[in-house]
Amino acid sequence: MSDDLPPDLERLRVVERYLELQLDAVRARIADLTGGGPAAAAAAPEVTWVVELRRTPQGYQPSVLHDPGCFALGGVRTERLSTADAIEALAGPRARLAPCALCTPERQLGVTVDRG
Image (cartoon, one colour):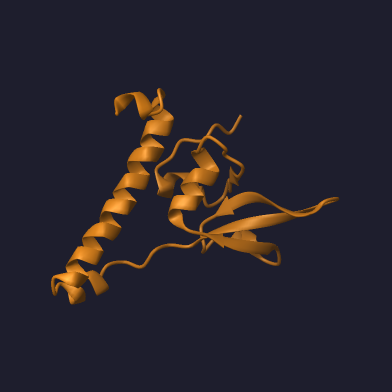
């Protein structure tokens, strides 16, 4: 099993965070099925992250990840991502988004991003 894990600390942290989110979801489902529904319902709702779309000659392309309350989003095209997808888009093996320099979503998601 350990041979299947990424060799570097950064990607291991991404895997760790993803598994924490999955474990929380499993525990909430178990609580629902065993009569612990009200406790599970009181859990914080999933944050939906916001992707800024930039206009390119090929059309609008995903470019920057934002916290949903970021004030830099005024008047730009956006789409939404789940937390797991946001982590993957910032720090996964096929990272494709830059984090917003103002709202720093990578801190909230617990991932390290090279800004260089």
